[in-house]
Image (cartoon, rainbow, N blue to C red; front, side, top):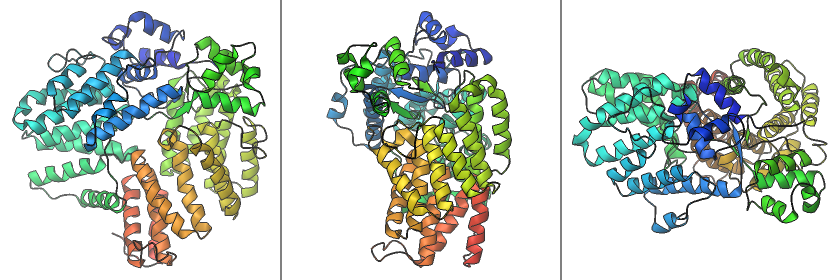
Length: 600
């Protein structure tokens, strides 16, 4: 079955539904011919430009997994590392020089804007930062209007600029007041929630902390609205800053501070201190798409089919070109990629959602299903899965879509206790067979997509439930070995890594490997904060709490003792309430009651 790129078509449909004109969206970014060809699926701009185009219509492109070359991926990692070093104050000249030459694979305008802005930030040079912002928003700061299309990263640059400027010259706040108010109004009117949650917290904090106006009630309104979004979407990055801002605002009004805010703040700070969490990165700018590497995709599919590089190149391109592609040293032309993909049976394009469709609405619905699943809302996920299947209609002919729908439906039945464990395992094996030949016999040669890895996680959960943690942990270690063999780091495969790491510490406890389980908890907690996955904090806190209470710790783990058990469970309960995780709340309360731990 032929797979075609639909990112441009999806973008066009979404832009038109939102009433955004092409000329307004592309202003000071790209020419009209480029966007026309992009929307007609004739060309693909580079990934940073596509991300900016989606941002400018208030939508998020991070629901797509991006397949990129090693060179493009290296650039992404350089960007992230550079920002982290600048914010932590550990930047040196060689960090800039390591990427001094312009990268051919990245849009020159966006590349130059990034470099200029962060050099200005590092040097506390407000004029250079302003100049960088004006490269794509020349109206900044005085002539911006609600009729413009301005992206999240552009607003993030503005907010970092205002923070840097006012920390140095706080008396100049009047000049920035109107800009911050404009940003708050604009993002609330024009951004869908996935984009809004990425930027609203910083905008609310800049407004609350650095603009000394008398209208404290308005500050509280924005703090609360931003916090509600963080909680709904289980975001943890910067949430303590938001809550602290709320607490300070109540103090300014000499009003009583609500107990839940004080408790949430103290809990988050305690967890960060316990696990030595530092946040030296810019979550508003950090790229959050999951990443596949093109060269790894080529190699795994070639090996799965038992072909040599010469056989894979036959009739498509010369062997030298193919080797360069598989070694990540060249970006293929669109026609070349399509020919190789067809020859090797690669069911992937550059931009991939977990379902194959040309409707953004379908992809958003799947993301909503995932969000509900994180909160363990019984029954609602099943209804949405049925609706999504109906809406997909003819798209259900793709085995990937049938695999996604069936696997999520069966997993929900399993969680609700409506399917026997052996029947469930058989169903999982059948859905995996839809896209992986003999997966249970040979796991070595296959490129595992996010969807397939999550289904294999379901298999691991099922074996554990069956009492076969020994089988489950062998499968788990194979999957982690596979992921760790990739050049892509764990943060760029966030969905699979998050669920696999959580389940691995459960398996280690089952196998009575308590020391290793605790060490894993400390390692994984840092990853959860960096991935901005607040929903994964609770299961990580439960493990050391249980191990402490049962007395299964070793002398080498001096940080843990019986007294710690109460602390971990109380933290877990507070955070499960913070992120509306009803199932966790219920089980934690029951366990605390059974072991006579006081509930806050």
